[in-house]
Length: 200
Image 1: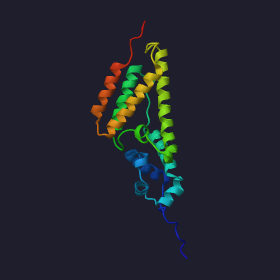
Image 2: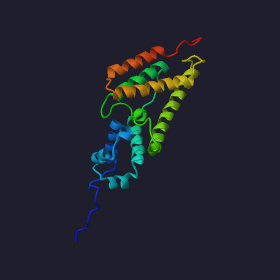
Image 3: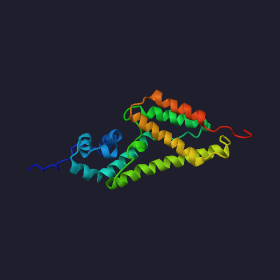
């Protein structure tokens, strides 16, 4: 007698490939906009199979965010002068946010407002944004110690300002702004950075 294959999971099911496809859905639609139907269509799995493979939509989103960070995350370079590093950081954001496979930043705008049913997913992207802010703080503290920034530089305020620029660029990219439009933000930000260091 021929053994009956479990329904809902393709014979060639590849969890990495399914995760890649789910990432694209979340990237395009955000967490709450990504319906189970769209995730099923992208992964080729039925709802029961999707839950067996990834436990829940929130867990799938968490794994997708991790995959996104592994493949697409970037930070301000430490081998450049601070103003140049931030300009490069924002210029790269402008390029990445307007280049396939997705527009904008999944971490910045994939989930902002949420209800109780998606608190775990919200915590995932919030933790990533907090880590990005921490990295910026560290880069600013280092620049201040090197004398690239005035000793009175507001580390927290500057880090959050740069973080806000990144998030705003993500929103604008999702609204259709192209690289040239977003690249002007990098140029303007460089001109606004405090560089008048006493004794420098």
